[in-house]
Every structure is written in structure tokens, then in C-alpha cells.
Image 1 (cartoon, protein in one colour):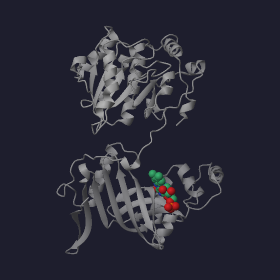
Image 2: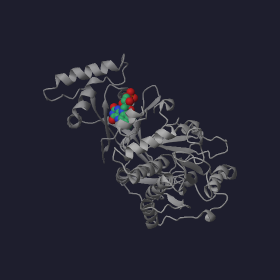
Image 3: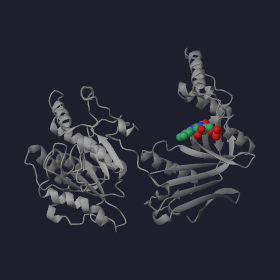
Image 4: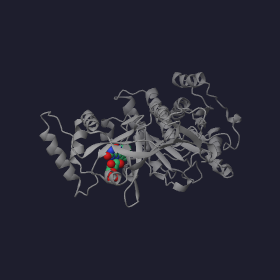
Length: 464
Ligand SMILES: Cc1cc2nc3c(=O)[nH]c(=O)nc-3n(C[C@H](O)[C@H](O)[C@H](O)COP(=O)(O)O)c2cc1C
């Protein structure tokens, strides 16, 4: 993340000028900018406040563009799985705004009047989106927005007695704040999240809440140059980027209440490999990143355990396979004590799987075959790295890599080094763990048993 101090802030005039240029010579239209702004707001909310915990969202929309951004955000929040409500007391009778209202009505998003809202909003909503006034606003807010702003100001007083705090998300400017000076009276809205659009306005320097995001991933170079903007890069394909300091998190307070389908003895497969495959397919279908990443724990002759991540490269009835360096720490420990434990954790599905058993090297031909199926860079990397040994610096790796790259630049076969190959763990114990509410998790253990000289897996339930 870029140092928040180095990010540019715009004056009210500059912000207006940026919009004029975007919608003039640069060919943008107001509805296009509104769409991108609303999407950025919804994306920022989704980054921090997950719909499972913060589902009820009230979007309070003002009469201008900021209100339009709020209407668009409400639509995206609906599609992201939230339950948005909209309070839009001074509707703007223009086709663009009427269209946004119609789109929300077609999704059955409820519109609430000011009178529908309780004095204390803290019990009815989890998120309050303040989309009343943007950077072009000046003067004092008029009714009914003065009262709506007061409801937001009072929210934290009411919420003190509640278990969960509703949060306030302001779009571009906290409503009622001076665009450049900030919360002049000190008695204005104190949002938990501010989503600055295009570039933060000067008042954002006074924002002290935990989550400051930037949205509006469309700023062309000519605007960056003209206004000498320093803006952070957006990660991946995201429509938003955090620009404030990351919040200080109390690790001991991190806690998830898992909600999952039950894991019942009569529903699981008799063979744990089949059950593993089923859960692995679920992890793939859920789009989890690297569901084949697993923690491998080994213990050498000194009796001290060590763990590291490796990638599962095959699972058959005869075991779980991964590839590594046969001269690494893990390999040394496995040669001293050929027993290991594998652990998969599939976040998002609330599942973990433990697999334990003896480990053997895979046959040389199998390692050979897999080695040559890898991209050329990985093959060279495997030769270049004397895994787990001390090296004087990165440059050594790059130098060796470059030399090998040149050596094999003619496309000749890269021979598998002797010190590289696979291991196979033959499972003697499985445990399938599924997180449940109030820590009453499911744990089903599979233990092999010989019955009539046939191996069968006994399934037992362990206390969580
Ligand atoms: C997600 C992930 C996957 C990894 N996969 C492998 C792998 O398949 N093989 C491997 O040798 N190292 C892999 N590593 C690197 C290991 O964690 C570790 O740094 C390396 O194998 C040296 O471990 P050792 O010194 O304990 O033997 C992976 C690391 C991560 C974070």
C-alpha cells in the first residue's frame, strides 16, 4: 500500500474541473461516471463488511449526483447479496435518476420515506450509506437532510448499548462537512468508511475512521498529468483500493461464527478418499485460490516438528503426492522419520481436513514424468535452488537461473535433477472438520480397521 500521506487531495474547484474535463473532451457521460462511482462504493463496502454479518443496508440519497451514486451502489449491493433499502426523499425528475429508481424497483428494493425511519436507526440497519451531498455542495443542509444527518450523528450514541455497531459509509464527502475544511463544527457525521471518488478531496485529510478507500478506476493519464495526481495502483481487477492506514486489529478478537450444512455420519462417503475428493471438488467449485495448498508437518530425529505449505499434485487410493527437493529440511526429516501430517484449510467453506500416515518417495519415473510436465521456468528453478540451504543473497539465484536459461535456450530437454522428486503419503488417519455455530463443530475421523482380513474405515465423531 502507498503511504497515505503521499496521495493527492483535490480542492473543490479542481474536483469540478476534473469532472468537466472527463465529461467534455474525454468523452465520459454523467451516467457512466455515476455507474463507476456506485460500483466502487459497493465494492469498497463488500471488501470490509461481509453480507453474512452486515446484510441490512440503508442508502440515504440526496437530490444530486452523490444521491445517484448511492442509487447505483444500492443496485450493486443487492446483486452482491446485501438487503438494501433506499431513502430518497427529494427525487430528481430526470430520465437518468428515474431510470435508477426503476432499476431498484424492478429488484424489489424497498424505498422508505423519512417518516418510515425510526429516530434510532441503530437497531434496523447494519450499514448506513451516506450519499446525500458530494463535493459540489456548499452552505447548510436543508430539510429533511439536516435531520437525516442528525440521525447519523446520533447513531453511535444509541448504538452504545447494542452488541453490534451499525457502520456509516460516506460517499466521497461525509455529508455536512466542508469540502476542504472537513467537519468544521466538530459535531458532524463521523463515518467508519469513506469512499473517495476519482481522487480524495481536501476534507478527506480530516477523516479519522478505520476504512478509507478510493474508487473510480478510470482516471486517464491526461488528468493525472494536468493535476499532478499521485494515486495508488488498484489491485488486480478491483474497483477500489484502500488508501488509509490498515485498521489496527486485535487478533484475539478475530472470531467467525460459522454457518455450514451439518456433516453427518450417514451422509459421508465410506471411503475417506472419496469424501476428500468430494470436498476438494466443492473447494474448486467455490473458486478458492489454491485449494491444493496443504501444510505438511514432519518431525526429524530430534523430535521437533516443522511445518510448511506444499502443493498437492495427485490424490489416488494409494495416497497423496507432492513434489519437492530431496535435500531440503523436510526431506531430511522424512528420511529420519518417514511419518507426516497434511492439513488442508478451505476458508469460505469452513472446512479443514487432516491426513496422517507414512511417507515414501514416488518412483523415479513418476517424478521424471511430472518434472517434464512443468513449465520450463519451474524446471530451471528446481535446479537453481538448493532448497533450505543458506545463500548470500537473491542475486545468486538469479545468476544461476540465467546461466541455466542460456544453457537450455536451444530447447533441449532439461534433465530432472537427482535431488528433486515426489513423496506419497499413505493415509492411516483422516479427519474431516466442518465449522458450525457456537463452536459446536463437526469432526468425523476415519480410522482403518481390519475386518475379515479386509481393510475398512471406521468413522467416529470427535468432540469439537
Ligand atoms: C502455497 C505454497 C505452496 C508451496 N508449494 C511447495 C511445493 O509444492 N513444494 C515445495 O518444495 N515447496 C513448496 N512451497 C515452499 C515451502 O513452503 C517451503 O518454503 C520449502 O519447501 C522449503 O521447506 P523446508 O525447508 O521445510 O524443506 C510452497 C509454499 C507455499 C506458500
